Length: 239
Image 1 (cartoon, rainbow, N blue to C red):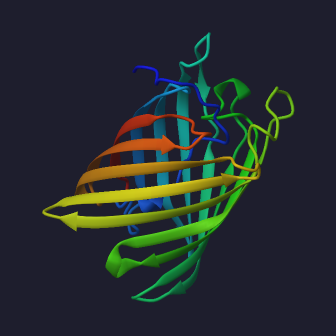
Image 2: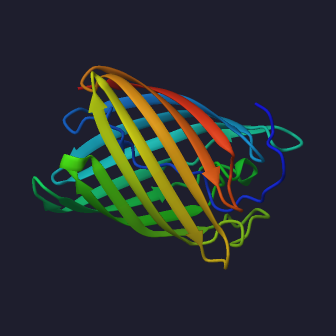
């Protein structure tokens, strides 16, 4: 991976959306996912991903994700376990034409600040409202991200400020393939600071058995974490 031209100062943390927006995690199947991604730019890194979703409890569903991080953009390469994230969704309205829900995500501070911005050992809580239109393959989300840096590091609230988060996801299927396009916007509580994330994903397989997925990502804005990233992943149904 080659470093990008120019220098940017990243704000906030690497985005990890809830696994259930990936159609490889079928609602009726408990699935285990693995994957790896590599990023280019100021914060060059390689990540190895794990995920478990959805865990159903009455009308609620849960998921857990975790990564192992190799950060290569520092003078001395750093590596270690990332911060696990726990996701929960509570339905508000379930109709054939439209669905509304509340979603929360909490980062568990298990990592170390040297792995910032992919992990940092601090606290992060995200609360979102979600609108889904199944016939259009459309999801819209919006809410707030509340982040606090770890107390035993040089990271401050200026590195991980609170933010407003909005995103849109489109999913389509044809000839046994599934494609997704997603765009996220993070507007930080610092005037003039924001970043945008774009992702294109292609998936192939049976979500009740085994699925392969490939994704390409890019970030834009003055506070981006990386310039571009590629990811490959695999999901296996457990039951």
